[in-house]
Image (cartoon, rainbow, N blue to C red; front, side, top):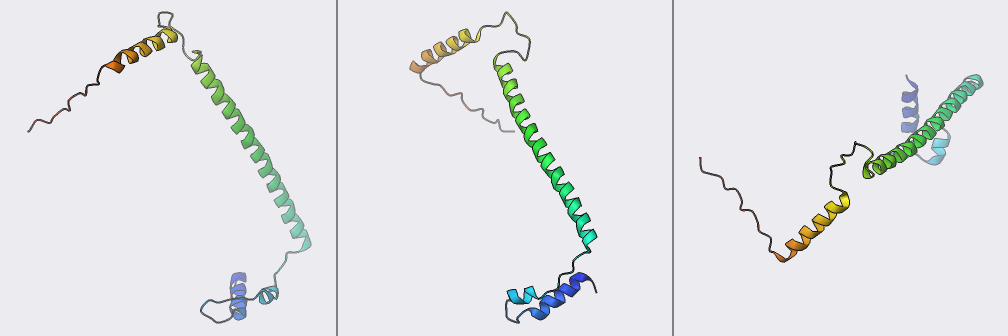
Length: 125
């Protein structure tokens, strides 16, 4: 018999026989719980302390990495918007002139009605 079987039998014996089996808190309090020897319990506690310390260290590392990633993302965006990611062509039109041209084109198109392109019709095969 395994320890699980022992526990299940103890619970089954303590449970009231209704449609929904129930175990009272006092019956649960009478269940014997085996404990390891003190030396083994101390060893287990030490292992848990080491594991929790490692978890804390890893959590701090994840937070630091996340903060670094956020800062790096901001640096990349800043560099992209200032034109530092790729070599600049001196023959390119300045952005201010391009925006001005776009604004003029929009202003000119406000008065004229928009025309839709006719849909491409499928030729019968």
